[in-house]
Image (cartoon, rainbow, N blue to C red; front, top):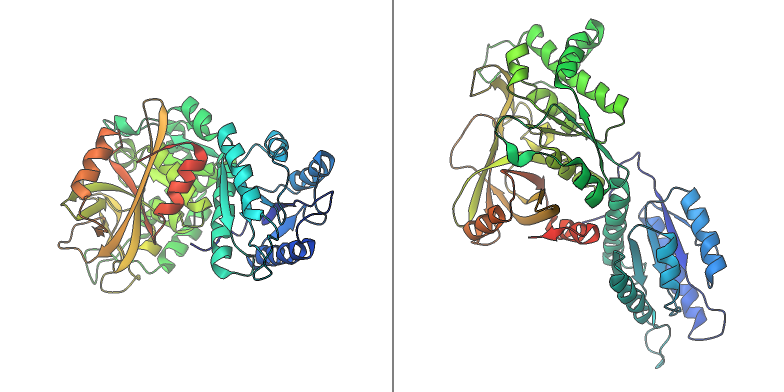
Length: 460
């Protein structure tokens, strides 16, 4: 996975390069690997802060970290072109609460001498961090190596995601949908385990907000919705009325307004039964549009699902698709949800398999997005959840393949990379995993495993 960051994210990254007070090792080589390292960071589109001068004692570490914090860096990278004193690991932990990226650079080839002991130094710091319970990531190799740059990008993305999660705020409108007790959120555990703040919002007040969206804004958004080119699931000649699109726009605009007003990075909506009863419309097209635009929105009051979406977004993978695990056999899983997948996860609008707009299968009210998701590509299935007063995570990979049958809403058949699906499902439900999972395009299981390790989550 290459390093990708949302455009509004802070591209400053803290970098400390340890020097030496007394002579030792090949200092000319240290300068070469340090220069290559900074070039590699800049090649990732990052601005290294704190690397202007080497650090070699507590005062220089404090000064550099002060500049790094002032620049609002979310990640800290430590380089030892020559092995440093392991005692400095404690200085770093005292002054940097988040995970740290240890970058070990290679030895100078071919001169018959040990030039740096950089990997030994990083190993020393890693052992100290682990025994002190401080999370870290390790990268090994030269800054000019493209594969190393990719590893470094992922490590920085992971540690940045942890920092951002610790400042994040997730809202829930209403509660979990009736009977879906496995989705119930725990605000205190969220804060203790992930640092996230949960903000509860009133469903009746949201209903009033939907009604109060200014008509002019609704009309403008209806034009934007029509411009997407979505047609009715009923086929050629069926016309979608402005009135029906207007209700979807009210849902969309009110959720956007709430996220902005309350400073929310993610939002979960109790979408039924009240909303389709009060408005005779479902909010799923609105959720689909919001997700397509990069917003992290979940349905049915699944707060952990919204946070899982946020994790994917912070890691540059995208918000993903929250879905039911509908059925499986030993090697495949059929995923389905009523019709709120991000439009960019569907086939092209207007194509034979492209998404259309139809009524919900259960109650015949608009709008759901009907259409299978894109197949013939690798995918990752993952889930964050809480059980036994702790947080858990799983992720595994497969390939999206053409479905054996067609259903309304959004669906996808996934061929797992192994034939352990039945066994895996049994293990996961005995670990308390809820009935929703998150689907992402691409192979990201290892990235989520590392994120779980950094956050101290139980991995399955």
